[in-house]
Image (cartoon, rainbow, N blue to C red; front, side, top):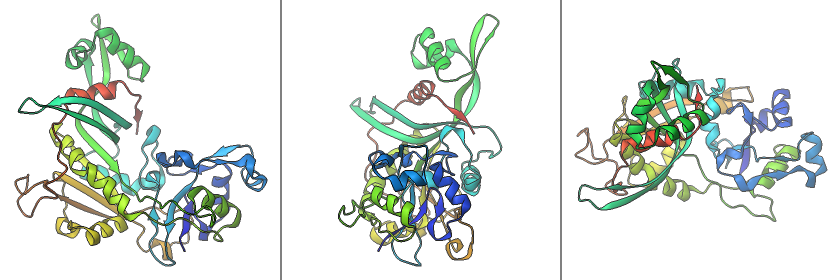
Amino acid sequence: MSKIFELYGHRLDRWNTRAEQNLIHAWCPFMDAECDGGGNRYQSSINLRNNPALQERIPGKTTIQCGVCSLQTRVGEQPWIVCPRRLLSLKNGNRSVHQTYIREQLFAYADLDVCRTCSVWSEVKIKTEAATEGEDTKSFDYTFDYVLTGSERKRISEVSSLLAVPIKLVQKAAEKNGFTLTVRNDEMWIDNFPTDPITIIEIMTSSTSGGNKEKRTQIAMACEDAILHGERHNAPGINYRQVWARMVSQLIVKSQVGIAWGGKTIWLIQDVLADYISKSTALILSQYLSDHLDEVNILSFGYGDSISNDPESLLELRNSTLFSGPITKSGLTSSHDGFVDIVKIGAPPPKSQIWKSLLNKPFFRI
């Protein structure tokens, strides 16, 4: 029977005082903030007022988000990460010490300085229309988990011209979203306007099955029982098919967008998901082992031997592997076939669209 492996960042079978303190505050150590349910479980909040025993364990709160990080479907097997924050969180500009290795690997492959301050935006949505070479109109409606960019000093008048937006609206958006404005020689400048290189980060973690209310295997119920009874609980399983379906529907499109903008897209996944993809599809990821980025890039991480050898209750993921290759045989490399010839983008949005979306959204320093 499936069990929760990690709850609010800590493994249940190594529960200790530190883990208990995290629970009291419903704290996510990977966000360094209160758990938000992982961005994909908004319907799994827990009302503590309905359960006095839960409220006693987590005093001072009336509602918490379901803090399930990972599930272990069978004893001794590798856990499955079900929360994207567990794999990587750059939200609010926080750099968790428990994800140092992941950031180092990610920044190294993306040719970014891990010590340098980067501008990062989370959940960047672009909904627009763009013209193909044949002058057909194609719609584009996607949300990027994270967008990392460099920054440069730029006149507001230049930004206005680039985005085809009036100067007053550019200034208003810049002020609202925390950009640094400076007047030089009677001209207004944005000192930290986004610039190349653009790196798109997509995080794909496993989905859970719906669970059974009577058996209390729904995710929120499992969380409640794990808080009260530790390892004596039941949890939902993993919805393997949905994971790959969600990923393949975006894999090529978002990779093509990164290329069209002169940047790269990197997908972060767990090693057990990479194994599942190779076993259940025609895509054999081991054929794409690489030490550098290409057109399609998948960077996997895993727990490795730490689940049996590490006495700590809070584990850092390691064991990184990069899989990369061209989209098609005629891509940037010719050493092997392309990833897929399906789900291609109709027409990439113009690069000015990403600058416009980033200007109109708050950002953080990491």
